[in-house]
Length: 203
Image (cartoon, rainbow, N blue to C red; front, side, top):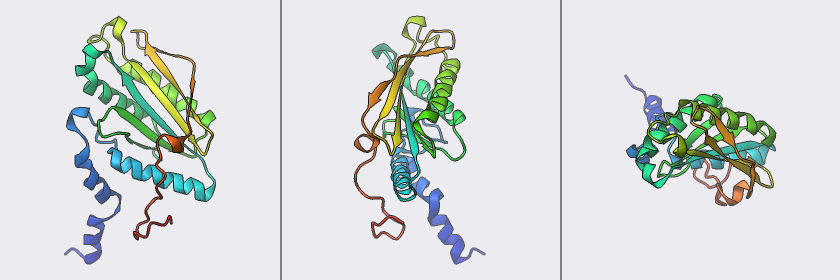
């Protein structure tokens, strides 16, 4: 017989929070079940920022999106699914991955305890795996999608990004990195993280 605590566990906690937001993910976005919807990712991003402010630790946010030619937009759902699978395969168990926006066109990951220097390793791994797994036949050798990456370190003065292009043989070549604005000016809003008791204070 279910106890009162059992019933509470079913209606609270991460599982219940995920179930509230999961229907918001668009089916035509090629959404991977392992990727969190954007609303939940935003909540976890705010929480990670509050934790970093409180404990003095760092974290990194990495986002990936794919540049497709206009006549290949019908291939976007399948391409995003390949990207989502690659991101899921390259991250640690402690990392968080999800859709950055509701449109399902940007995959993002939160890497707690990671620095700017260490962020190059997972980025290069994801780029390499993406161009290995992507079937380029529907695109043709001259229209292979480009992979845009953005990396934000918090706290930090700014981030970096780069674009990788495939050569049609399962390899990607990245262009020189470019500078980005700080994380708090791009991904994180200024509103405080709401605590579980609803008083609006960080715990």
